[in-house]
Amino acid sequence: MEEEVVGVALIVGSSALGLLTAFGLRTRLPGAVVTGILAAAGAGLGAGALLVQDGPSAADWWATLIGLAVLVPFHARVVLGPLGAGGGSRDRA
Image 1 (cartoon, one colour):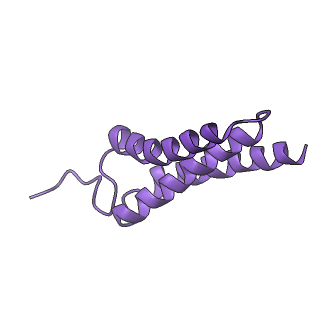
Image 2 (cartoon, rainbow, N blue to C red):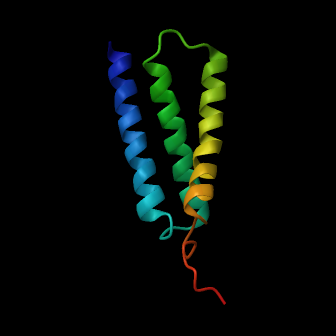
């Protein structure tokens, strides 16, 4: 029961962090910082999802954490545009 509570908390917290970063901080912080935060949010989201499941394997943990740490920043970049300060600006010389 305790693992499920921690899992749900990780899902909610990581989702909030990812949304805040993608929509609020993506163009205000350096690209490497945004990428790192989004990667951590993705890994946290994956960890939370695995904690609410019954008996995920070690391979599940590796694939999920690495996969989401890579895919969440990539997804934000593809859908929302460049990451980093000035990334959303269309007024480039």
